[in-house]
Image (tube, rainbow, N blue to C red; front, side):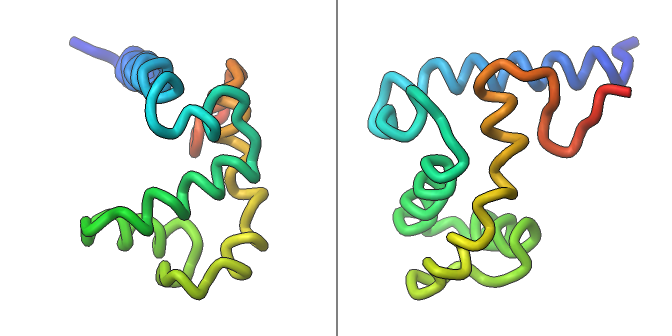
Length: 101
């Protein structure tokens, strides 16, 4: 039986593996040396390109407003919400929504 901790570790490993692939691809300028600002810009770029309803719903859940191209200033005020992602991608122990106690 897989424990919750084992599942989380497997999930983190899968995200890191995908990150290694993605930082060699189209969005490498955002991912090679990730920062909160670059991750925010990447989020905006990906949402501009996306036709997926789920992406827009997820954005709204995280940021509390609907994504629209004209919301750039609102999104810039949310840069700090990308800190946990930045820390994780840079090899930190924390993961989005998870705290090591």
